[in-house]
Image (tube, rainbow, N blue to C red; front, side, top):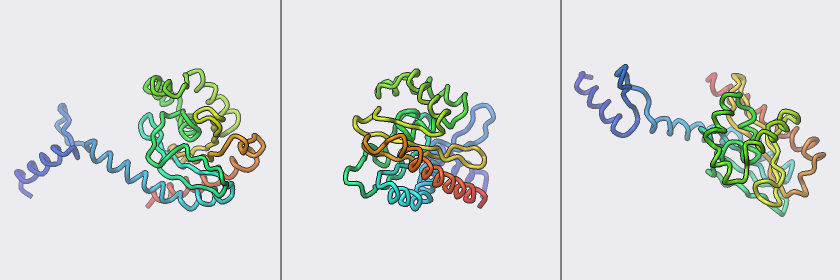
Length: 219
């Protein structure tokens, strides 16, 4: 590689957004396009690794199971599995975005984050949350309930007649990589069923998924 060729390659990569040059240090850094590709790959990995566990959850509960991952101040649904119960709760499609804190999966992601990150998300998402009728006070109450109960719950708040519960997926390095959630009609979301059947099952699969993510990271 001659120096001229190297600069030409760098210029081409910069033009398409794969890298950018820091104006002060003059060093080349990864650009937004490569960051986006990496994010898509990560989503694909976690969705693939979660598939069997989600199918187990759907079979056990007969309800709908969702997997969401954080991206900036948003939660993105990356996978969904449907159970056999005749009334299905399909409140999220794969690819749908919600503000962190709105909906059970997005709420579990929000609540599992550190204080500083939660405060930053609140600042960024205030108007977006308002589109769903959620205020900062509402979110604080949901966070307090999460701390007390150990799971996130959305009881008929976002879509009338449907409720959801979720737990975060947290790796050994304390990274919040996703959230698993059950969605069902309100009548199926009794407190007893949530706490004796649904949440224990979610915690088990979230732990297994976190372990698989740890193993992948270790290579």
